[in-house]
Image (cartoon, rainbow, N blue to C red; front, side, top):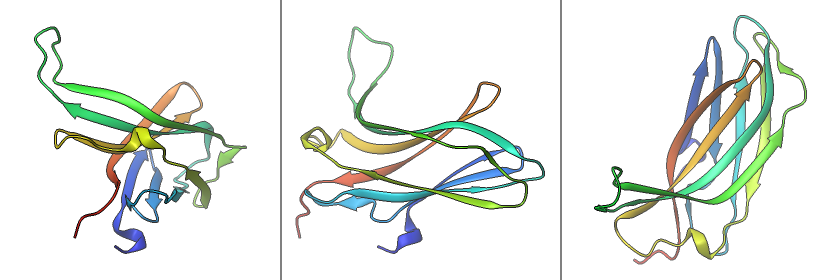
Length: 139
């Protein structure tokens, strides 16, 4: 899998945010590494902080719930962002998340997603998510 094959993109106004993961399909023992790219738009954008969540989603019908998707956060990382994204400039923020046994998928009804949440000044949150995999691969 190529570096740019996993690409999560969020747009806010004319600013664009892209999350690029080096390896979206991880084997046990590997680390989730990537870079968040901020491409400045027509004006400066003040970023308060960024959150990355690895979420286990399980599609399972339950009579006691109106929702069929059970969402469990299995990893969470918060990153401060000093300053703002300047107009017409690109800024990068690297990240690394170490998986643990909670990332393992035990059923074909479950999947993992990486959710990027960008908290922008004035209380606006922008988010996006893409699927990742973790575990032993069978040939």
